[in-house]
Length: 295
Image (cartoon, rainbow, N blue to C red):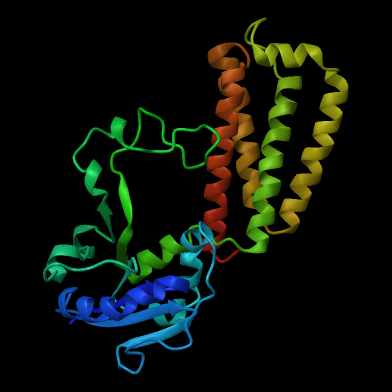
């Protein structure tokens, strides 16, 4: 029989849902698995806490959106215990099974190359992605352009094999070190972008990039931004973020090569492209460093 840990958060007023959740999920949610309920709560006592399949774990109540965004940090705090299960599943406090759900309906099959399970948001299931309420803002790192996307996933139920789910939780742990590195990375990419505008050839004599480049004292700008970028690179490397520095410099080199070869120089649009690429590759480097235990 497969073993499974159900991860449940009920802090603050949400603790009232646990009384009905436990008997409902115990009866109807994957009854063909050996399940253990990990209850993250700030309540001093909860119903059924003496049951052999219930583990009460203290979790401070956090304001929204931290309560949602930082839930995975809480799960990682129990990683040593959770990695011993075959599967892990998170369920929203107010979920209710209306019928029995069995393992062959929900659990991913590693033999078929599956490792995670997510649930499509019902109102958008089967609809063209152009109608999904993705964040389209270019200022958001979660932005999905109109030409991209496939599914719109609900956050109330998700899980997978223990190894895959813990890896998902650890994509980026918001530790003080990671937070400081990421803030420095965002400054670095903008310093490099400004340095490029002051140093790389322009593709045309119009546009925002050309306006900024011609309005500034390029020599002063280059010196100031080069010093700033160098200080940031040294600081990030000292914090263990050398991979983020290499990622940013690699994207800068690619930016220079592509802009000269394909466009004859840089434009404002290409400067925006560089910022997006730099953020993606530095974020990937940050994830890789955390997965590899370097941070």
